[in-house]
Length: 76
Image 1 (cartoon, rainbow, N blue to C red):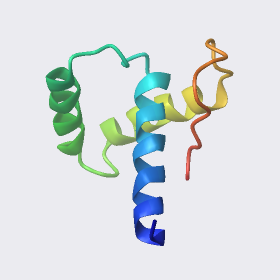
Image 2 (cartoon, helix red, strand yellow):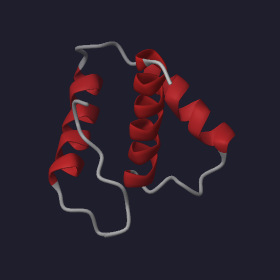
Image 3 (spheres, helix red, strand yellow):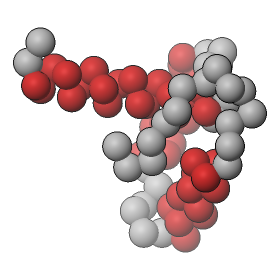
């Protein structure tokens, strides 16, 4: 496996962990994609961007309620 493919696989694993951490592992894929598209429309640096980022930072700092869930790194 090349270094690029390893990095891509790791990125996908970490993104999957974020979905699990958010409690959305059983959510409909179309719902998830729609939500991500809406998030992509939020202007970087806007009040909404910072509000959502702050929520995410809090969740990363909080201990997981599910010990079997993968550890997701914030800035991996």
